[in-house]
Image (cartoon, rainbow, N blue to C red; front, side):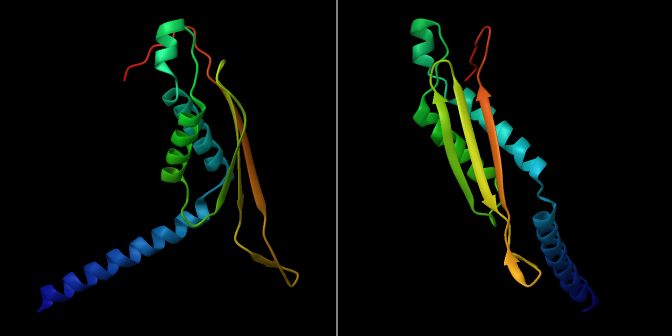
Length: 139
């Protein structure tokens, strides 16, 4: 009987720790973490969207716009917070030479300041240029 109580309390403790970790995660998501996440995703999406057939034929690095959109949105959806709504805008997309500009907007949860509910809109922008001397793809 005593071992059954220990198993019960162990399960309750596990659920409690999981809930606390989820709450702490919502408070510790910072603007700097979002910037570095966006930077890494942009770099990886640029490399993944290189048009290898064009590179083999002409020896120049060129990206495929549609593939960049697809890879960026997929990677961002995997890494972004699920409790925030993001607005992703692409600007300055050049296939050759590879250059992209990405703007991501998100709004904070509403909070009360002097009797009114207020929200903040956070905007992150990043420009990425894929510049290589000798491009080699291992994939």
